[in-house]
Image (tube, rainbow, N blue to C red; front, side):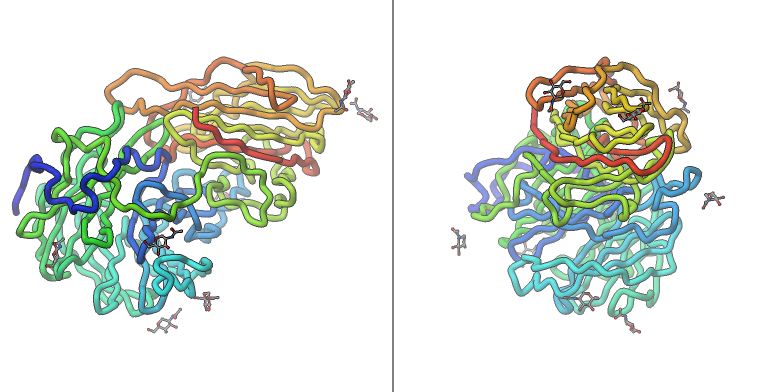
Length: 537
Ligand SMILES: *[C@@H]1O[C@H](CO)[C@@H](O)[C@H](O)[C@H]1NC(C)=O
Ligand SMILES: *[C@@H]1O[C@H](CO)[C@@H](O)[C@H](O)[C@H]1NC(C)=O
Ligand SMILES: *[C@@H]1O[C@H](CO)[C@@H](O)[C@H](O)[C@H]1NC(C)=O
Ligand SMILES: *[C@@H]1O[C@H](CO)[C@@H](O)[C@H](O)[C@H]1NC(C)=O
Ligand SMILES: *[C@@H]1O[C@H](CO)[C@@H](O)[C@H](O)[C@H]1NC(C)=O
Ligand SMILES: *[C@@H]1O[C@H](CO)[C@@H](O)[C@H](O)[C@H]1NC(C)=O
Ligand SMILES: *[C@@H]1O[C@H](CO)[C@@H](O)[C@H](O)[C@H]1NC(C)=O
Ligand SMILES: *[C@@H]1O[C@H](CO)[C@@H](O)[C@H](O)[C@H]1NC(C)=O
């Protein structure tokens, strides 16, 4: 067993000429909560998969041409098919902090099939595929995504990384502390065999496997959460594997954030490899950073460092005249589908929403508890600071209905409209608290009341200004969010005091923007979300 302190890499001279002298990019590459990534390339296109817990659809697929600019283009799991609690239709059986965590996405060229696989709870491992994409034939471009459930494999492949070998055999690295490799059948629907291939000699907890074959050598990348990344290497898939430490509490590139650790690697067309890792950046969640890799003569990877840290900037990996759409701006919900920025809190009740000149949300649940209400639609907050403004037609509210814009997490707050009798009033509610075991501890307290809306009011604008600059470690700073309303779309008034966000990691998912509409008396009311405007501040 070798233990190696990562060495300061002497310079950028081994980087290829096409990269040298190029413009630089800044880390983080996506300042949004996209943890547990798996990354790979087909032709010109890089793909990135991430975990989403109980948000639905799950396991977003992001696309990039340069490893720097990314946009979500699909979800591998269109609906969480993991059991009734993922539907949020039972106040005492919910799936908070369960669902999709470290899972895997890879592409099999011979069958033109994307494979997503993820262990849910203690198992089984669910399999979804998308075939008929023409990705390999089309330089990486997917014509259409055709995600289909292939059922499940009975074993829990915990924190799994799929490798499709040169001869098309599928292998999966998985496990914690002891890392195993399973060989699957030709279409990934059954296990052929599995073996333990590596155990931490010192019982150091490791997980988050990603598996690669590079120049005939097998690599399994694992993390010691949430600070280190180790590389296991062997000439034989079944081992024995040797280990080296790739990063050990590496500093940079963000202040008051965690260390870049768990992630995956991908090469560009000229053979240069990049490591895409994530770091804890609460209250915003876990966000990805990119660094180039070099390789020692005996085949060990090393992160290219800047002043012995993870660089804030590096040369842009790929220069490309194609780019992905920007993800800020106005979404006016013209449909026919929601953009892949959006994810519901648990599976939605599809009979209670539609897209047709706006997002129509008919109340789906009678409850006092936002954490139990179905059809709250969320999206990640871009950092370091951004504002999300929902324009909502509230004319269809019924007595007892509550609609609004929520800063969604286990400790949450919102600005909304309460309808009582024939009167609609603006409120700011804080102290919503999901509690330590994710059993609602507090449904919130009205912290401020705004004006009563005129009886003929149609639209209100509800705005959340969020600062998710990391305040996770090395600081006592607390980040705050403010809530605003407008009845004309131009003049906004703050309601309530700034809300202090929690920076704990236990809920895993970072704060999100969300919009909700639920009933406390009876179903039958509705709102129309006419637009969402996302601005960087
Ligand atoms: C809700 O979940 C609880 C706990 O799992 C279960 O006992 C109960 O039967 C469920 N209720 C309904 C209506 O499904
Ligand atoms: C979609 O996937 C299914 C199952 O893999 C496959 O049978 C079908 O041919 C695919 N459809 C298209 C249009 O590729
Ligand atoms: C996968 O392969 C097995 C045999 O290896 C076959 O029985 C099964 O039908 C195949 N499943 C799919 C979805 O193609
Ligand atoms: C793989 O082999 C090629 C050809 O010998 C070499 O150029 C490349 O640097 C090697 N890659 C790695 C990661 O070792
Ligand atoms: C983009 O680059 C490719 C290859 O470099 C080239 O074939 C194509 O014409 C370019 N497209 C545009 C719109 O410049
Ligand atoms: C609400 O308005 C309707 C129609 O204007 C009226 O009939 C009803 O009495 C009002 N209800 C209350 C509680 O004011
Ligand atoms: C429950 O909520 C109260 C009021 O918000 C808070 O003081 C308390 O710490 C919470 N308890 C837990 C376990 O989250
Ligand atoms: C709403 O009613 C008020 C009087 O109560 C009137 O001044 C205003 O113009 C009306 N607004 C609309 C949009 O009809």
